Image (cartoon, protein in one colour):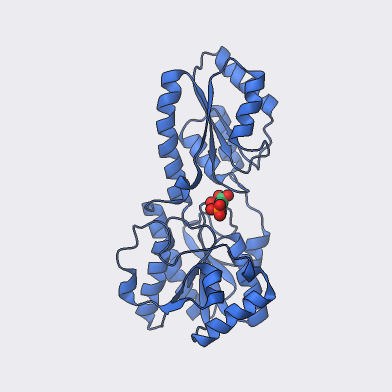
Length: 318
Ligand code: F6P
């Protein structure tokens, strides 16, 4: 098993569930350190049942993670596969996101090793599961931070632009924006121009609103919170504006109950799936049921935040 790509809260709960399930079914289990980089460098060690004690509540990943350029090459993947063979590994559980699964898919095609994926990313941008491990925790972290920022916004009659993570997706922005009562939510998936935003702020000002929060997804087409604030300022120079980029605070911390349970279910389902002969699929939870979706479909099917949530966010933000 390995954790790959950006770490997400709940990865440790998934690692624990995989190790414990293997033990339950009498299967030997190893951890590959630092993701695909460790697979290429042979950083592989056996994990016993007690090696995963007291990690269900810990953020990050005890296996560590990486974004590995070398694994993008066929030579890198061959080197990695040779190390797997050397350690007697015949099946893989890969906990990660889109990029990690694209690499996994290639490894499977070239070398035929059995593998299942577990969606571990705060971005929630994977087809085949309603939620990914880490998204709930990250969103709650954002909500907690924005609630605090709102105290200053209210006390000083300020307009805050708060940038949240989501490289190409607005899931965190939309959920957190609704939960914090943001006046506007800028997402890569929805087209809101600076002119629209300025008109909205003017209307709200005229209606007596004195402070506001605008949530900006980092992947928004307007270029992030700093740029949006600059552009709005040129139109509305009388507003006192501030920018906060929440950054990696969103990726850390103890996972929520939802993420711990989701990761635990998926960890068990990954081992059971491999035992049933499944391969090249991602474990997901859809409508509260475990499902398996081919990795190719996962990586090639775009997902987007709910249109209905976006619609209602506009109705209730006035
Ligand atoms: O994919 C998860 C994510 O947190 C994105 O939301 C963000 O754009 C990216 O990772 C940041 O990656 P890194 O930590 O490598 O800078």
